[in-house]
Amino acid sequence: MIHFDIPGREQVELAYLVLDFNGTLAFDGQFIAGVPELLTQLAEQLKIYICTADTYQTVQNQCHSLPVEVKTFPQGQAAAAKLEIVEQLGADQCVAIGNGYNDLLMIKQAALSVAVIEGEGTYGQCLYHSDIVCRSIGEALDLLNHPQRIKATLRH
Image 1 (cartoon, rainbow, N blue to C red):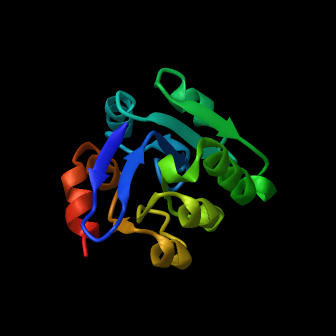
Image 2: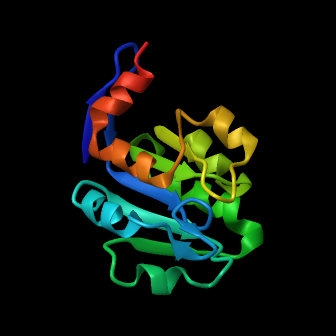
């Protein structure tokens, strides 16, 4: 669990990390360099869910040795499925990280949300509704390893 106080806001206790796969953790179906190591490190503090329509059909192979739970669903149901996962886990305990149109609902609902800008770009509304925007998934995941950075970014 990751716990931090943000001056001017409520305490946050995060137990779950919910992530999009393609465009967020992976580019063209392959993990971005350094991502598996960061996920393994974060799994010591958070239960990790990778949620995807698996456009490239690579997620199971990419994640097979990682301490994560993979959730796949049909492409037309991705946004609703991601939101449902966040709600079932308890949105107040979730951090959501994504980049695409089908990530917007989970980004809006999670206690902490991060939009990332990788090679495939980011849906504009994700930027608007996220608590934090990062230039890369590495930066986003590293924030969770250093909660004081989150506090510094979000304090009033």
